[in-house]
Amino acid sequence: MQLLYFIPGTMCNELLWSKLWPLLEKNCQLIHLAIPKEGSLTEVVAQLVLQIKISSQGEKFGLIGFSLGGYLASAVSLEFDSQLEKLMIIANTPKALPEKELMQRQRIISAVKSHGYHGINRSRVITFIDEKQHNNNALIELIQQMDNSFGAQELSHHIVALSKRKDLCIELQHSKKNIWFCHGQSDHLIDPQRMQIMQAESACISLKEVPQCGHFLPLEQPIQLAKLIRDWLKDAS
Image 1 (spheres, rainbow, N blue to C red):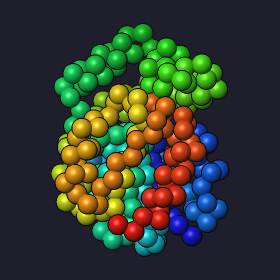
Image 2 (cartoon, rainbow, N blue to C red):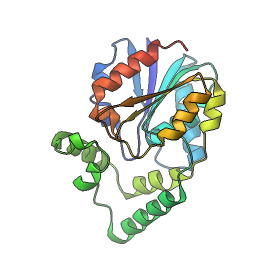
Image 3 (tube, helix red, strand yellow):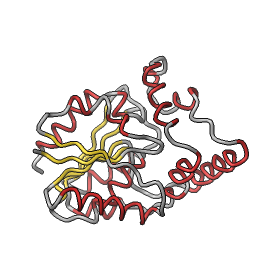
Image 4 (cartoon, rainbow, N blue to C red):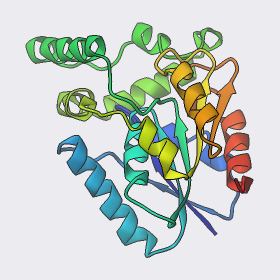
């Protein structure tokens, strides 16, 4: 049975995989790894590594991360040797965030401290998804439901403490691991040019783009993502 670990993104829980997991093979063991609720980025990565080491009991595994979870999965992957067989990064470029983005995140937290956190609104959700999904009320409400399961403390942890990132792209290129980067065609939160360079410079890295999809690939296009995961599992490169 193929062992697969999944790490979600900012303000996301296991509902992120609710449309995807039913489409994957029955002989896969699918495990959701919640992002630890506190700690620096280094400490969170160490906690995730420990969880995997304990639960996997030395068994080989694949690792899939979405958005923030994609960066965390990238960092986690560098702590394993041959036990980690494959890595899939969804909707993330594993590099340091630009100063402009860091400042914007600090402003968000300052506003939350002043006025409280009332959850992500519909107009904000729409900025993350493809225009063809803008009237998909079920999708929008699901993203809001995930967000509402967290609070101001988790938001601050996710977008401040876990934003202090270093560039992992070169390390991943040199790791020789089988890595697939998957993203939506209209996802404006990733750096496709940087990932194209990584693909060109490493035979172990593949870049996959999904049309008519924004940032939330597991929810917007679960059928296409399930197919990519099946192909990734078969890929022997």
